[in-house]
Image (tube, one colour):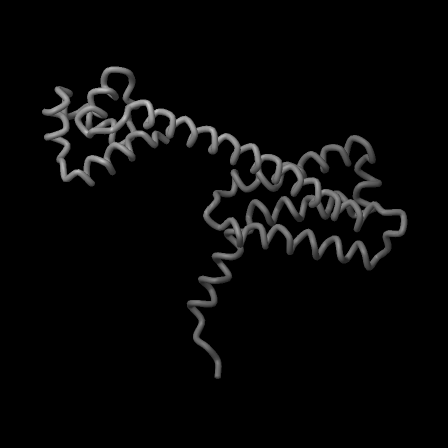
Length: 196
């Protein structure tokens, strides 16, 4: 999203100037000012210098600040990607340890099933504003890759016998449909009267 438009709008309002006044003083079209402020257009060159001149903003400082904001945004995205990769590896490791480990038994398989349900539900709860496709891409990608590798490397019979494939499928199911399950549970509880 264009941060320049937001900053221009904020400075204009702080100076008590209307869009019409800014357009008139900068010799720009009112529609241009409106489109810049709602981030439909990004001002360049002469347009930006005219606006900065009217608003009494140092153009170079304004551009340097904008570039540093973009750099911080890129760094934040890189950190987020690294976090998601590490988090997905940890999720894959937990399921693998509980199902594929040489000392895995019925108890650890049961633990794997429980973890396959609870971890995705916690992810859904903490990412309730995220849509299901984005959640699957960010948190289910590791499960999907692990599922593919399990089918290719172990084969279906061993993958099902160890419980790895069912646990991965359960996790993917709850990541994708977890928000519907949680909202139905909440709406059902809201409709039923309390028993005293």
